[in-house]
Image (spheres, rainbow, N blue to C red):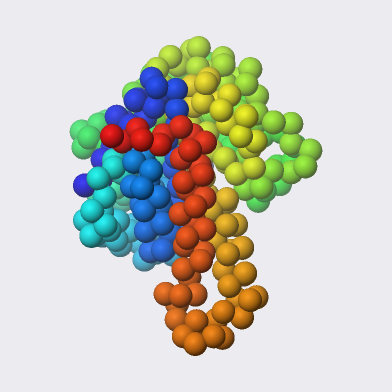
Length: 288
Ligand SMILES: [Zn+2]
């Protein structure tokens, strides 16, 4: 059964480790993340972006697929199904169709409107035992033409949004989505420290985990990050393994063209990547 991310993240924050959010793109991805989490005895968050939800046949289809897998794979670790960067409308849809967690990305609204919409969604999700993530300070990405340093959130605004009763808070600390440019200046631990001092027990979320050096990840966890989003790294691992399979001509041998064979190396690469991240984040064995 899907659970809210609240308990797993509060435990992570108190225990100074982080739970990974791994974004899913299809059936293979979902099986891979669940398998890795179960084998590592780690809690896990399955992230679904609006685009991925549409690709998989709608948010309701995703709920059906994930619930089915939890049962047939006999998954015993806590699993949250989380809408990633949701609009106000998508949050409402996901709440209705059975997600256990949503992120309301109101970072592009003026702070007053972000606060009003977040407050409403906090009320609805609380009533349903769901978790809700809010974002302060936009987290850029390649597509936005962000080069160099990502935006840093205002710690006072973080405190104001945390006080609305959200479960976890994403704040820009120089991180960006996708691959980092060569001239990236790194995470701003000064900003992170200031945010944590004002927000106390609130689990903080680090987006754009791909390409952040391991020592920076560990330092961020020590300063209150309890949820780390991983997406691009799994995609690259999947593509590399699939490319290797085809370049070696394996699809031309026997029934190597069977999608169950063709997609197997990429799926295994996702399993391996998720396990590597679970180890790095320190959540291995925390579901026991
Ligand atoms: Zn993000």
